[in-house]
Image (tube, rainbow, N blue to C red; front, side, top):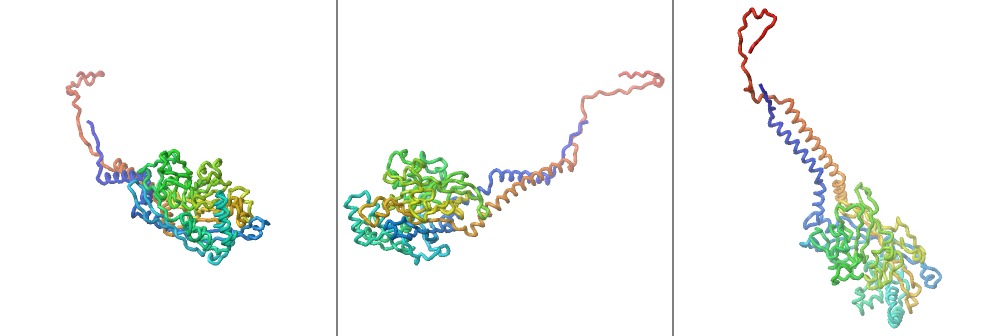
Length: 534
């Protein structure tokens, strides 16, 4: 007889096992696909009406711009040739920079065009004095700058301007309030030039910071929001990573590059274009691609600086709120000659490359010899540093650092971009007011751009996204996996040990032989040997 048993599985046990399987599957999906990261990527998409678009259009944090001015303390002694110029640093004079990205237009090729506008408001809390009343003595930039600009012009032009400046009583140094120096004051030479040559000097007042910041406004910028939907004719100059990065610049004022440094979009052969001539592939410094790859260097472009600025990856750490950040800094060879830094091959003006640590940006500023450097000529030529008293470059005080949150792609508090504006004076002729400055790179001021602390709600959101929710997601994944396996195991044990076994069938094999009944006489039973015959 063969007995086959079947376990009776109730509907509850089946439901229990199914729930366990679902929980294990969900745990595996959470582990494999990281839904939190998918939600974050969706949140960080720049699209019309999205929350991220609102934050980008009007950033919820301010940038504090601190200005440090080089104040001359020995003007008379210098002009007599008795001493080299002595500077004392005056400042900071702080302003809050409020950015708005206006007129955003999204295009079918995965790009968006907008007009950034920066407004500045005095920040008394971070200023050492009132810029409206604080006075300084500084070189007369218009007379020295224009005379230096005319160095290679004819004898008649040089002597004519020198005579004009003398007739107007233009001094070598001017005594101004900080506000006048930064945002504009009446200058006779500037007013005259604006009156007779408005195509060249298109401003009636001269303020050094006003001229710099004016270049930062009134621009039209196109960036990529969906890389891959449009192609670039400069793919040979850019890396694949740069081409496929969100938010990289495509065009600035309708151009892929900087005409000031020889970029010519009409050039039929894009192969002849140099990477240093391009703004395409750089970032505007307000948002970066996410997730930002560790060890990747990034390039930022701000129109006032007249050139792209590469930032080198330094390390990874956490800020005071415990949020992960990547640290970047300017390279020591940022303003080096092309033989040291090949990226700078575009930035030699009229075939002349400035000394180490200097960058001539005259093509962006009316041809006037404006020169950039790091503050106090950090990483510059010692000969330039030793030309003056009061110049003391220190990496901790004058170096730049950018702190970027790699998963959100925004600069964090503690970021400090520092740049110095100078006036490079050539060998001027026929002007006694400018002759003492010949061959000098005069430090005018340096700027520190720093991000303020993020608003409390943004700080709370970042803490939630990067500290709380990832832990909750991991706990949920493990919990679902462990509990799901436990439920499946419990269902199996219930089936094996607590369900009744029921016979499925009872059968008798047909392969058998009948055993005949034989009557045996009693006398045979007494014999020792018994034979049973079939």
